[in-house]
Structure formats: structure tokens, C-alpha cells
Length: 42
Image 1 (tube, rainbow, N blue to C red):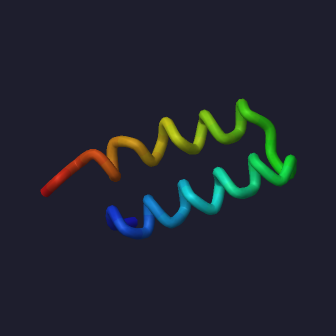
Image 2: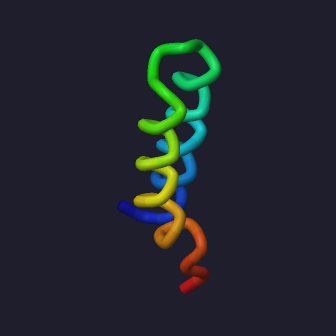
């Protein structure tokens, strides 16, 4: 997964959270997994 894909996935996950489709805990878990990919500038 590249950085752009990780950002898209996180945005999609946030939308699901906002719609009440997933829990805050699920969102935080996925965010924690994607953050290193997104923050890696190389």
C-alpha cells in the first residue's frame, strides 16, 4: 500500500465512522496501522 492509498483508506474509514458503520475503536485501530505509511515521506 502506498501513501495515497493509505490516505484514501483512512478517509473512507472516517466516513464509515461518521455514518455509524464502525466503532471509534475500529477507526483508531486502522488509523494506527495507516499512520506510519502516511507519515513516511520517502
